[in-house]
Amino acid sequence: MGQIKVEKNAGGIEGLCVIEPTVHGDARGYFMETYNQKDMEAEGLDLVFVQDNQSSSVKGVLRGLHFQKHYPQGKLVRVVRGSVFDAAVDLRKGSSTYGRWFGVELTEENKKQFYIPKGFAHGFLVLSDFAEFCYKCTDFYHPDDEGGLAWNDPEIGIAWPHVTGDYRGTASAEGYAMDDGTPLTLSGKDQLWSGLGSTFTF
Image (cartoon, rainbow, N blue to C red; front, side, top):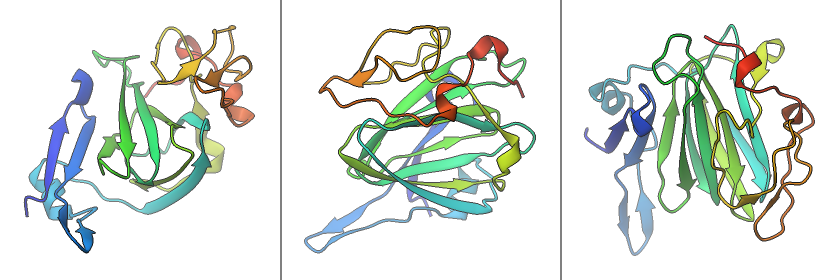
């Protein structure tokens, strides 16, 4: 017990949590518990996860901002290789922080985890040459239920690190790059999402 440190309401947004596990290291390497139900419950996080996912991406890939409309997922995310900037946007109707975002860098070195509850849009940008990203979900993925939010909506104003370019009124990656010249890469559908003013609310 007591193997995690939890920053609750990260960025002043209720429900967001940055979690740091206790890492036991010596000359051989390290060991840590990546998930312990009792520790989570002791911190007030009474969660049931039903699906684990893992993705790999190269530098400059931006995935998001995603959510499920009718089967919303809480997500516990972490990086096992490389580094990403992970961001969440509050889409809860009536929330005092509606439309606000919070982001955290997750790396294989800092081993931080980020819990995003239901009612948020979520996405991440790969900062390293390569990254492997893992996440636990509280509901199953429903492909016909997916929604999204423009990653670069100026009304939200996510400060994606190391990204240069000017907003041209859409979520297109055209004209954007990392500050070292690496092109910003988004899926076709992620370049079609609209801004906050026309998005789904929970």
